Figure 1 (cartoon, rainbow, N blue to C red):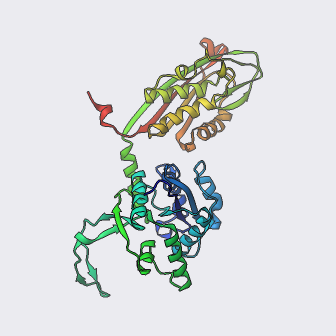
Figure 2 (cartoon, rainbow, N blue to C red):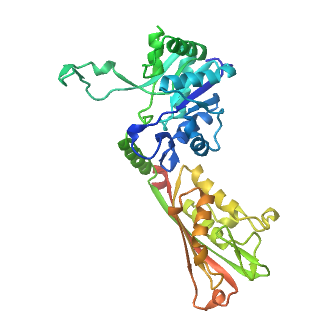
Figure 3 (cartoon, rainbow, N blue to C red):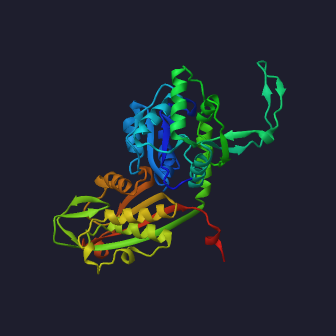
Length: 398
């Protein structure tokens, strides 16, 4: 394919997904803690050969769509139609102003498309004009009649399972879709079928068995289990921090401004809860401690808000392909009283970390008036973090 060719994507996300069971449209449900549509779109938004991603959504889902794909590059969404075929045409029409050379058409319910499949789709379309990803059929297939009796056994060596993204010369597939709509044909189940109806030769290229479509509740259960198995390297880290009291009228604890008769003596905002939590996460990653990443000797961290330290630690987990399983903080002090603010602190940690509040614990205890915390000279905090990373043989080598 010539380097000057521009590639765009139509991401079809207007369906209701009724077969997937309760929980709303399946493309907005989470799998592995991430919305299905985010996973599906991310691969295209970050692919270096894709110039535009055109989502097609149900107008009733606009708020869910915006929240689900925050941070990803895409065109303003266009409204879908009554059928998948109508939605694809709407997406193609919306892309016409960009005049792409090649278009990939992908179902948002396929969240595990890889960069390799996308690259193969682009290459195949540039070479053939129309191509689809396929995987071999491994089971024996039977053709049955109306009564359920077997009528034939096709040669499975010639059978293939079609996937998306299906790739085409943009002007050709747009014209074919327009022709089908004009002729009142709305019964095609994929874009390759429309191309075949129009007399085009549709080539195939190597798909990916992981690039499956989520259709039933069982699909979600199976893929959740698969993703969990991939994150088989479970690690726990611990952290500890302490800050003395000084002049002031409030302290920052777990990201929450807490009124108090004193303030913290600290280089940053002195948030002992978040500092201990950052050390716990970095410890689970075997990635140093908070001081090595944010040295107190660096003037730019003077008075800094500690939420950025926690965000940084969470990003380090994400960069390793991992997920946070649990975060826990224990605060040790006589005053201020933590109990009334416990859930507020949990919510703030969850917000900063991007995890559900059910994965965050905040506890408090006193030292029975013993030691510096008992004399109300400062506050101490311990923390633990459990994370899951992709299993790697290298990490288990001796």
